[in-house]
Image 1 (cartoon, one colour):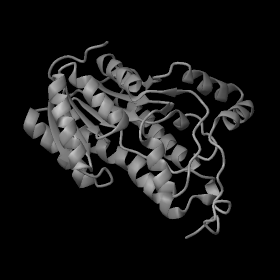
Image 2: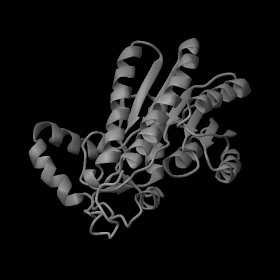
Image 3: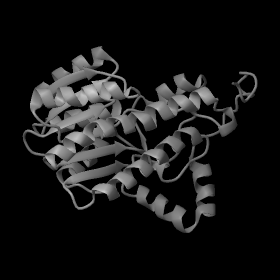
Length: 278
């Protein structure tokens, strides 16, 4: 396993579960200092104990990524406690499932607020510190659906594409400096993501038939990217093939993702009334 070295200070949003939690523990084993951010204080408290048991140091911050002032406070507390910030990992996010005409405007706004604006606020808060230090690393956890959309995940996919656009522009702005920007493209990961999506959607959610990976596999890939910065990270290497296929044969790719993606559950079929509500 790649080591990120002693003393690296890493802030992680959405750290209380899933990929965020797995990455916090993975980096702690390398002796990193983890600034763990989430909304669930009880989970953060348990995570802090595990981080320190793994060999790292921990600072927990209860904060909401949709609030820019709270992201600035997150960064300020990290710098006040540890004197610097080396990595901002923008990981907080969730999904809502359904055909585009089943997704309500309120649901779409919530997705954008958390998945896109959460990334924007955390990145914007960290950049002044990185510029002052003349070094830093923004890591954005997107999804393979941020490269190629799949059926019934259009609302979620749109926010993941937005993250990628932000990252690519920022990467071009800082090219040649010691500030790095990496985007992570996991496939379906064994976390509480589906359970949260089911709750947010308000109905049962079919599982993807495509390839899957563990949160620990994603965490290992992120650790390697911190040790040796790269623009894009594919924890499941063959996921790059889907991106290439979509570039050269998008129509054929449509049929592939329809076959292996999630299956439809229409609002009217669920007995929830009209497919669109305001």
